[in-house]
Every structure is written in structure tokens, then in C-alpha cells.
Image (tube, rainbow, N blue to C red; front, top):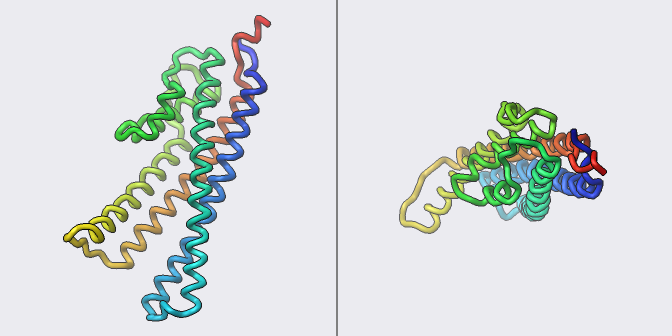
Length: 224
């Protein structure tokens, strides 16, 4: 048998969850505004009117939304990592058997090459399943929401990485990778779109796991 998680731990998890969701939603919204601004700027440039007032207005909109999105992303990233650590810690404090995820390693794996491609996904899947009452034998069961989130995140990151590497080579090396501007813009917009989808799914995941952990129980409380 198990008892309830300490109210303080629940409150902290909910706080991290709310900050993560708000920051992620705000960042995604900024990206949605950024996309038409970039399209408008490209159209104006192709029309030869890059010195027009319209271009300056769209450039200001694009610049402001990019700055705000970056700030919100950083806030959301910190809040998410705190939430990630706390949610995993809650599972361990409950006394569930067979847990694989460890709080510090789960957070650190986000920054470790190669490990960041697998560990956060596997940890989030276990976190979802165990928070929703599944036993240790179902911890690795597929979760559609988690899989879709991770797929969108990796796809968006891949597309944006290709664009970054191409720009880096063109600017800082004697080699040139010639790609049509429309294609380059399309890949960038597709990358942003996948990131926005990933942000939406992440908000859903964080909210549902936080809600599920309200009913988690701490084995120490039954002996109090």
C-alpha cells in the first residue's frame, strides 16, 4: 500500500508545470507570428522593395517575436527541467518498484550527445506510464502522445540543423551549398512548424502527468 505524496512536492510540480506550459505556449505563439513576418519579408525582397516602410515593419515584427520567443524558450526550458526532475523524484519517493529513470541522469541526458536522442524519450514514456498507474512491466509500453512529441521534436531539430549547417558552410568556408531560396525558406518554416507541434504535445504531456501524479501515493504515509 501507498500514501499520498507530500503536498509541498505536489505544489512544486504544479508550479513547474504551469510555468512550462505558459512559456511553451507563448514561445510557440511567437513562432506562429514569426512565420508570416518572414514570408512577407521574403516577398518584399523579391519585389525589390526591401527599403520600403512595409519591409521595416515586418522586420521589426520578426525581430521582436524572435526575441520574445527566445526568452520564453529559455524560461520554459528551465521550468521543464525542474519539472522533469521533480516528477521522476516523486515516482521514487512513492516507492514504486522497477523504476529505471534517475532524476539527475534524466536531466543531464538532455545535454549529452547521443544519449539525448534516446534517454529523455524513454524516461518520459516511463514517467507517463508509471504516473498513470501502470506496473513496471508496462513501463516501456508505447504512448502515442509521447511518441508524437518526440518525433516532431527530432524532425524539427533535424530540419533546423540542416539549415544552420548550410548557412555556416556558406558564410565561414570557401565552399558554397547552392539551394533555392524558396526551398531554404520552406525547410526553415517546416522546422518551426514541427517545433510548434512538439511544444503543443509537450504542454499536454506535462499537464497530464502532473494531474496523474495527484493520485500517486507515498508508502511512508500509511504508517504515520
